[in-house]
Amino acid sequence: MLKAIAHTVFAQAQREGGGFLVHRALGGSRLPDLDPFLMLDHMGPMHYKPGEAIGAPDHPHRGFETVTYVIKGEMQHLDSHGNKGDLKEGWVQWMTAGSGVVHSEMPSDRIYREGGTVEGFQLWVNLPAKDKRIPPRYQDTPADKIPVVTVADNSAVSIKVMAGEAEAIKGPIETRFPIVFLDIRMDAGAKPYQLKLPSGLHGFIYVFEGDDGALLVGPESAPLKKFDLGVINSKYLNQQDSANVFIQLALKSANAGVRCLVVAGTPLREKVARYGPFVMNTQDEIIEAFMDYQAGKMGAIDGAAERQRQTEAALTKSSQN
Image 1 (cartoon, one colour):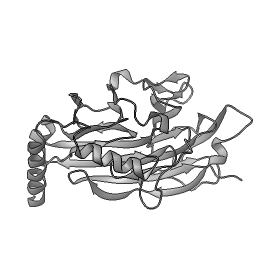
Image 2: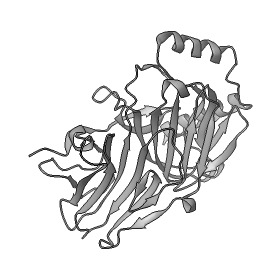
Image 3: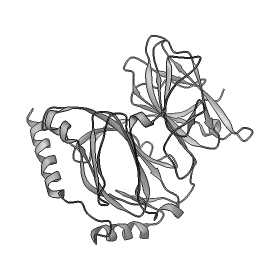
Image 4: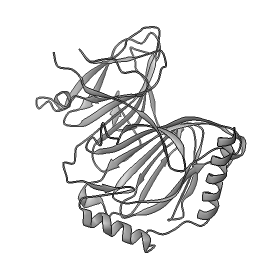
C-alpha cells in the first residue's frame, strides 16, 4: 500500500540570526528544499530572562518570500522601506522581498525588557523568475483576522487557515501562486480527520507540539513526533483524476494530542541559484544582488549599530546565566 509520507526529517537544533535557537526542518543537508519551499525554521521555544532576548539584526533579502508566524511572544519588524511594527502572538507576516529589502527581526521592546517565551516559524517561499524583481510587499495579519475552524463532526480538531482553504474557509493571505498554509490542532480524543488538499502540489507536515503524542498520516507511514517533518508523497498530491486529494490524519494515542503545520504549494520547476539571503535563477543574478546591496540600492535602516550592540549585550548576559 502506498505510504502517504515519502520520508521523514528530524529538525536539527542550531543557532541563527544573532544567535537564537532554531530547529531547522527544511533547508538543511538532509532536505535542502522542497520546491517551491526553501526553508522552514522552527524558532525556539526560547525562554528569556530580562535583557537576554536575541533576534536577527539588519540583513537583506531578494528574490523570494519570508513568512513569519509567531506562536508565543512578540517580535519587532523594521525595514528599509520605513515599515515598523510588533508581530504578536498568533500573527503572520508574509513578506515578499522581491527586488530587495533590508530588514531586522528583533525581540519586541517588552520582551527584551521583561523577558518571556518566544516561539514561531519562518518559512521561505521561492518566487517564480517573473516575480523576483517585483516591489517588496508586506501582509501583516493579526491573529483575529485569521480564521480558526472547528471541524463540525470532530470538535477535537481545529484548523487555523492562513493561506489556501480548509473546511470551505479561505485564509486571508494572498499568494503569488496556489499555497496552503495551515495550523492544525488535534486534541486528545480526536477522531481521524480527512484533510483535503488540491492535487498537483508539493507539501509537508511538521509536528511542533505534543511531547507525548504522535501523528499518523495516511496508511503505512511511520508516526510523526515533535520536531519531525514528513514530506507528503508526491504520488498522493499529483493524482490526475481529481482536483483534490484526501489524506487521513490520526492520533497514534487517543490520550495525547498534537499540533502541526501543513504546508503545500505549486512547484515552480525553475533553476534555483541561492546564497545566504538571496535566491535567484542564476549565479550572475546572485552576484548582482550582492553588488546592489553593497551599493546601498536596497536601502538601510537607522539604528543598525544599536541593534547590533543590543544583540551582543544579550548574548553576553545569557552566557553568564
